Image 1 (cartoon, rainbow, N blue to C red):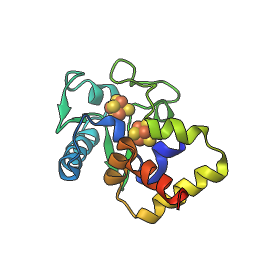
Image 2: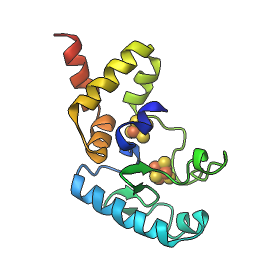
Image 3: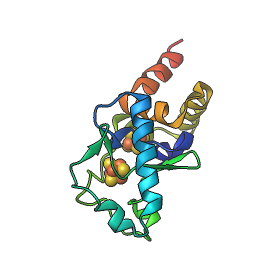
Image 4: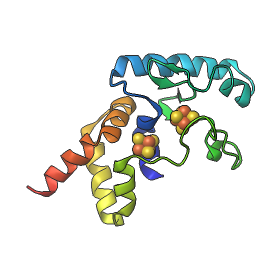
Length: 143
Ligand code: SF4
Ligand code: SF4
């Protein structure tokens, strides 16, 4: 999904209610450190109880070279979805659902709008998930 990969990657739905950029970045940093230490992806995933979070953030989400991603995603595991049983793997946020319904012109307008905000990946994630970027984009359409 284009929106989930945009602007350095999105993890808006990989956190609970946390909106603290610093706490989310701290969790990402610790997850990433553990990810690099574990040789096996399943050992990494299973290192903690499924329901356990870090600063309200999923223990599986990582950030490498400025890109946020889930190592359990099927795109990274030859089609095998290692998220099953660990999250709602078919979930899409409201912004993503609406984005998918738009034509390409409107999608590109939205992506250009987002790029113009110059957000880091964590702030992007929070505001995509909360719908703030969608609301602000709509305001520009009604001007
Ligand atoms: S919050 Fe939305 S855009 Fe971001 S990863 Fe989740 S579904 Fe994708
Ligand atoms: S398992 Fe992956 S996709 Fe699911 S919440 Fe955790 S990091 Fe996000």
